[in-house]
Image 1: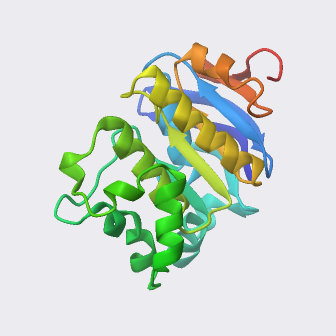
Image 2: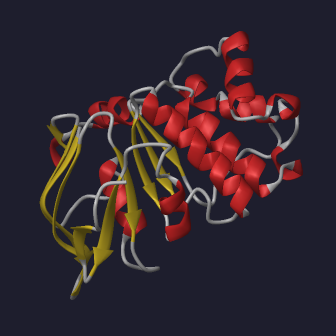
Length: 223
């Protein structure tokens, strides 16, 4: 699904990632760990073509990301749902319309029943018409997850989705991601919270990737 072949990423005079090779298989669940500034967000951006490698090759759904046309890149991104740590919404639109925005951008109409079901799945049916500034941090993160999956993507990339919420909400978000994985979605979740990674045992079969010394390592055994 996504393959890195000896990928290097950096800036003049300084590499951030060096000789990174990995394969994210369909239906897999991976945690991505590493200290702050190690390059977790940059690696995720490589996974959906937001960044281009300085060396090596990134293949996304069998295509070299560097050779994709603008239309091919747009089609590829519809197959990937992205949850950012600092999720952004249009504050003048109610929650349900924010969640449905990817459909509108793609020229599609949201099915009201399906949208209600999706909001119920993330526990936000009662907040459907609420404006984003009125939402708590946990509600915003669950709304971001709903928005990420509304296009029925094949893969979910979640960049520190629990970084700004408490432990109980972190577990709720983890359980939602684990449920998506059981439905066949590939999940890559960046986190610095080792307790959360331990909590995933029993929820899903996951592997742990760690960025250390500019390289990507398989950290320990499978969960």
